[in-house]
Length: 296
Length: 250
Image (cartoon, rainbow over all chains, first blue to last red):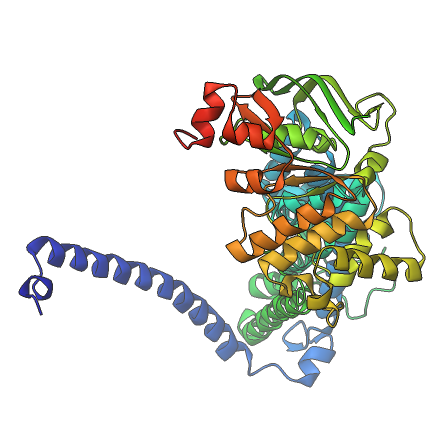
């Protein structure tokens, strides 16, 4: 072999070194993200797994929260997830569809988009304050699942709108044109071509927004969450306990903080498991719904 | 009577004057090719004939386009009925994420046809006309995405024919295809001329020469020359046309 091809010039050696160095740094950073996640998860799991048993999952707190379980809080969180979904999904999906498919691209849509983005930047405690003033007091819903769900729904509305918009935007216009060229209306095109293609992504976004809702504390602080309720809520006008708020309560107040600590870890673990299950569901649904749909 | 009459068309994208004073006629059951360098306005003009440019915001049109003697930009024109009569095939194959069968049936369904027996007949007939039937008759329920690019494009042609248009607009239908698939499309176009009036945009001059009866050469939004294809390619009147078809620029 020609010698020229087997020896490297100084410049070649240098550029290979820079290449290797740069990617080593990039790799380390991305690995460290995973590392931190595993660290947090294993910390909670190790600390919390000990208290989790059937009794913990199915009974109410007892003896000044130093014993018992988190059953009412689990049910409360599930109620709030469902309630906020009922509000934010229809409104959010339709707004997203309107903005991407119907509205003329102009100043109004830009304005709505800027406002939705601003809305998602508002701290969640401010949503809580608004919820208290508007839903609890003004509309007279009181501290209730209804008020809490509405507040949480508002909170995740921007996310739902954004998700829907992005999912629709990912569908190339050639499909819209193909359908319209056959005499289909905008609505027919949307229902029969665009939505079936966008659904897996919309669905994933929706479920991920539920994960966000399930972990929020501030919006339900003034609108819904109960410090302690041994029984389950009977209607949407009842207060309820919720996992994130319960975690806050037993970590900061109560009769015996030391005795409450293991329960706090257990509560955190249950919350994390619920969120992970929701994310898992998103993945499964996405794969299932998107099975026969590929954008080429 | 002319199938399509284009009269004094000016078209603007915002401030950009994309088409300048275009007038031309297309005779029934003929193939007309639009040629010219990128950005010359040939696709824009094509998309005016089935009002596809209506979907693009901030555009402006003056002049008239008549199809079968009717002004298609008149107030109150039923655009869906126009598009049923003037079908379109796009540059990249764009079958829907549905089965082969449902891709063809789609145009019929959105136009209110429920009779499944009739739909099945149309599916078979148009797939045969598009020279695709033999290749797909055993897998009509399979996803259209399983077909090759060339097959997908013939499926799109069949899809356009299913709603019985009298005009087919084709926007560089073979530009994303290999030579064998391209040859099949060209053969198909020659065959379809018997039943349809075809306007085809192409970048490929040999293709225009092979399949069209008349050719229009566009440059910078103007129609430089429009004549019988053999005249355009052997003895064009304008020097600009001569330069383009001999490959001196473009």
